[in-house]
Image (cartoon, rainbow, N blue to C red):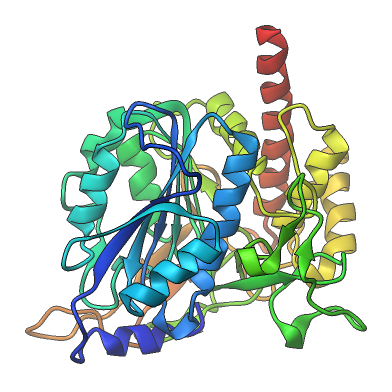
Length: 403
């Protein structure tokens, strides 16, 4: 995300001890044995409450889709107890509790461990491709290689998934979690930014990139079955940029993607399960339609294409992907830089960074993506779209079998 440098600098200056906060999206008693959707919100001091706002929209979506399940928030408390809690109340959260003296990877692990039926995990935070998700603006990171995260595999439901909404979260982190947890995981291969809803013309990144003669809405009448006010956290989402990442760690001109990429790395995840999980996840996207399990194929396509296509090329992109699905001619690439060729196990690329001698830390500005694709054109986006369509058919067949 844009302001990563600010967060990184803050790691090395004096700062108050950050506690973390837990909350629920509905005023119900927390049940460790109920299907649970977990939202994790990390450091974002430079962004105000934008990360919490995006998480609130996701929480409302899960509440609407699954009223008999629970949504559990684990969030950094970084701007001060009163302000953070007031924001959460305004966004509709309940059972707000402050915990701990810092926000560590181990704290997240312990919180997640208390639930036996995790249906989804969404992470909203700054992230660094190599070091992972920033939790509290200091050196505390969500670290899948420590704290026993692989032990959480048995805590996920058979249809579970994770979604990592921060910058470059698919370079390493998404694949590692997919392998450890045995679930599909979505992440980004470039920087991410906030998109806001404009005059029924969809989501756009900011005022500089909005549609002509349009303005931000005050009420979201598209993404939910019931209208949600923007003041209540219903009008924004975190989304990949359609251009190469340029930031504190380097410039990734040689490889990226302008959409969230799904990875199903663990060999226990069959293709059918991977694609069906993608389709189930799409029901919860903050998008241009409010989907249900029985939504029409056309409404489903509207949401998926909204999540795949860049805002400034939506019509062209939709036509190209529909043509690819119909003809099998899969080469299409609207990304504003050099795209990666990927499948659901990973990408034809290598991510490298230089290290500082003696201290063995990564050198700022030294990281790069080596693109190893063998063709001048990529099929990654069209393959993703076709997978979503196959997933929809599988999901509908599953529902029909239950009737």
